[in-house]
Image 1 (cartoon, protein in one colour):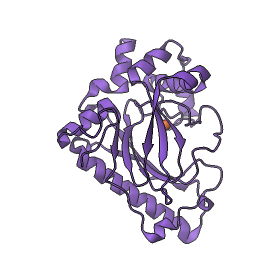
Image 2 (tube, helix red, strand yellow; image 1 turned 135 degrees about the horizontal axis):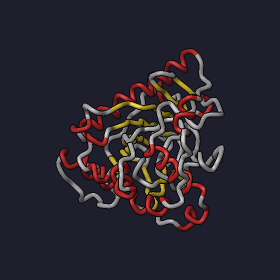
Image 3 (cartoon, protein in one colour; image 1 turned 90 degrees about the horizontal axis):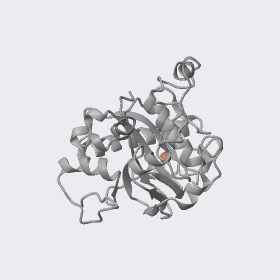
Image 4 (cartoon, helix red, strand yellow; image 1 turned 120 degrees about the horizontal axis):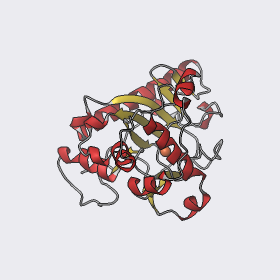
Length: 286
Ligand SMILES: [Fe+2]
């Protein structure tokens, strides 16, 4: 079965060469028949008891190892092994569906989401129940795309539910005029203080400003165009979260892998946030 893009329905089919172009323009592909299946030992990890109760997710990164877990010893090793196995599975999946990405995929963090998305967020900016496109305050992408692979591994069949909003260009035009401009030297100081892990480019600053403006606007959150998308237990989905306006509103137990991709690897570079924003600004942003 071909991956399904919500706007196009199950009839949307095409060869593998088309997948990347369709994903870049539609933003989201649902794969109802490509589950990531847990082993019995991994299923035993589906418990909020392994969360440290502070971090939103348990996560694994190349440099920092496992974060957000309360587990020690064998359980900590099992959590790391599960996330490592999912990361390799997600990378193989993307490389199979979009071979043009394979050589350029850069692995970001892997997350194991044991907490319900209903739980209150630490702040409005961190509240992923509000419509937004992803922009990371501490992790500038420098114009690279953010591609994420999710799998709903809920053991009792509960769906994960998102809202998906307007096209990126409409979202960007809505907030562009109100976006806060960084003050001179801000990017240098943030890097110097270790607040950002890489220099925050003009592109990153603008993406973050759009993210914050959208999340903080109550009228937008209440009335902006959106449709509800339900991901059944066992479903996987691949999303450009830097161009797909989204909010997670229900669900518990998911795995997620983040990848970064340069715009040069895109089949439709004109659909990337970098190129859309550069067209709006009339200049280079990175
Ligand atoms: Fe997000």
